[in-house]
View 1 (tube, one colour):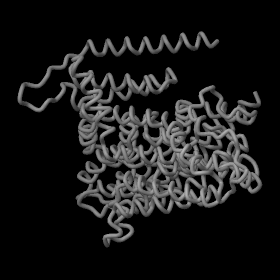
View 2 (cartoon, rainbow, N blue to C red; view 1 turned 60 degrees about the vertical axis):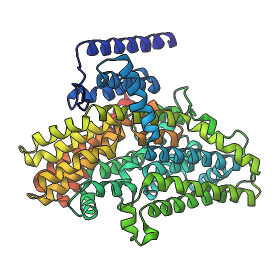
View 3 (cartoon, rainbow, N blue to C red; view 1 turned 60 degrees about the horizontal axis):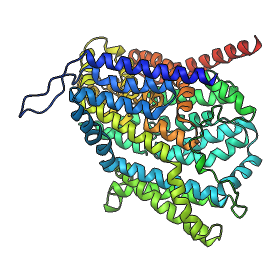
View 4 (cartoon, rainbow, N blue to C red; view 1 turned 90 degrees about the horizontal axis):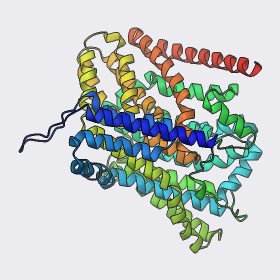
Length: 543
């Protein structure tokens, strides 16, 4: 059986490469005349979205994410360079990998990721995670309780999605493992309480990003007014809690959960984050050795973010959050968080200084898969940017703005989904679509502008939630220490159900233009869909 699967993967990869070659041979790109700014012939056309589509399709077919992402980068560089060998190689590295690793924001995120990996290793080595797992096992009764506790913690940590993913994963992983919740389900719970919660939290790095894109308007008040219209985020939370309470799963997730009940938390043999686990349990550690590091990390990261926003230079708390640099703030906060953690363990004599220092490279090694995927995903986004994907989508939205005005929120939601799915970035999607929405509605219909901005945010989060090249999706895999492709394939059906209900709700909102009617309709529709799914699964088991 393994031979046939391997052969099938090789055939799929060969077929994909053949298709790419056919696509490449069908297109001719000419370099710009000397002295002019270079612009590839495929600039701002549908071809700009082909590289990420190639990468995503290959990842889902082959179940191998590294080579799939690199092939997507290669296709983008070929399109940009006009199929010149030298130009392709230069663009892959100078315009892609080296460029994204030279970006200060990206470097800050990588620093944060590495330090979080080291902190997880420290907490495991000190026995804090195991002690918390034992304590929680006494307080939490059953699989439902473990999943609800994970959701609650995810909702409470609303500061930043990256911070949410890694913190919730490190705290709740021992608990969900204790009650045989699959790593794929844990990754879904983490992912569904990361971006969807951050995008409806007024004090978060996401709120700061969105308000920065609403030029000429009071961005913060618009963000507050848009919260009840953010149907995808709200309905995802309803769906997540509903599925846990109803004890039902569907799609690939059902297979993972059934296997987990039998003791197999992974279903597949790939355990890419196994290096982060500590084999020898430290009996000196207690619950305090997990709680103090986590609380310190939260406080330090909040202080770091408001520091970058000018809070200590006289800005108000909300204004400081709106102006904050999440990357730098999280790097500052995580640094002081790990210093406090090491000092705590030394004072309590839980770990020696040598053992603490050994955890730093171990934590780095544990995060190498996430760092590689992030680097390739950022490089792939650089390819789509160089091909003018933003301009293509902006022109597409503007051309449809004049007709079917009441359907525009639903259309914007779909466009946001597609763009975020293809590029793997929510914030990039905000930057493209929100200024267009403001320009279309600012002088005509203020309420429809708020609904459309919310549709843009919801679509961006939905596409980001579905995309295997999304940094938040990658972080959720790292936080749960789950195989990344497993996380994507199990989460996708759930995200698509929430997206379908949200799309219908945006059609309703476009006509009634009030959240008091549209949101209850969406919640009732979601509950009805969950009951249908539960009945279908019950009939399937009975037969």
